[in-house]
Length: 395
Image (cartoon, rainbow, N blue to C red; front, side, top):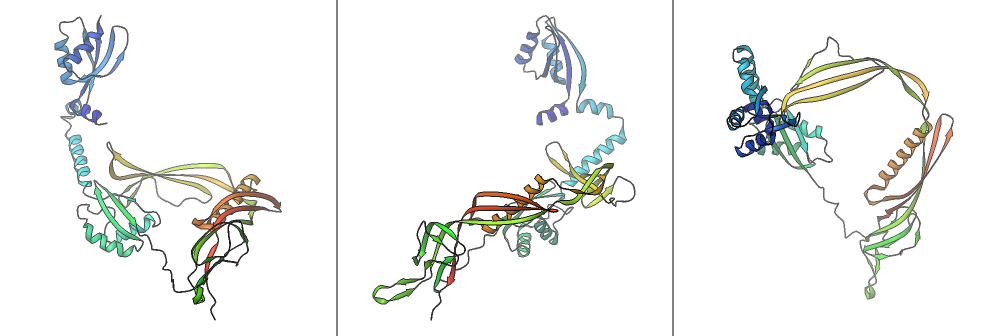
């Protein structure tokens, strides 16, 4: 891309070369360091090539002692454009004005890019920045990092660090989220670890207390897994804070009803496309009056920001609205799609119930139609940590 820009600035010419020994012309370009590119052969003795304006003059001087016939086919670039526009003062003034506006727009913020946020939504971060005056259209050189960070962090309790780096007209917001410490364990409180549900024990990790089960044991919900009452020898029984993890194979069976009767979209009707320009926070409508979308239609909005070569973002975004009128009719859903929806829903519910400490190892699904509903049943086998701490009943 940079080569194209450089060639455009210095200008280029398209030459046609005809010679009985065309390879000599290529060798002359290499020997005299004449730049050339875009070589295309038309025949065994004729080809075209591009070179710079100064390269054409040097090539003609170097090839003057050969039998080569060199003719110019066309020329392009900034010098040629300048010659064409040298008397068109209105266009030159407009171009100068556009360049001045582009240069001035780089001193303002027209777009935001937020990185580093996983749990804090981007909208919340941008809203906190807007409260401190950092919004679309504000000067980018007046950003006080320290003051901005101190005020924004008060608005975002889940963010521990924030920085705003302005490059051109884009503000890059870097965020580091806060990692909450685990809850404090009250080690002086005697507790037992019991089973949260039925399962087949696969692994026991007793961090404190006495393990009451071993690998391969079948346990019931509420059964004691790690006891907080240990033998203190000659000092009698001792109460401790029982801690540990007990992993087990567990089984689940759940079901859900998926409706089969639903409203379906009818055939496509009239399609209308409208355009608008977003300049900062201001929208300029190119279409006529009225912006209410008709009912019962599909609407797709596409945002196309304008950028210059090199990735320079402009403060203008083309908004394309395309909506297609479609009627709505009562219909019946496809059984296969309804079954897949039910299976996905059940699997998502089970995964959310297990959390980060459990995994689904095997699933089996079954479905049966019941009137206007499809009953989807799932039987799953999981591997999860079933131990939970409960206080020890002391007299």
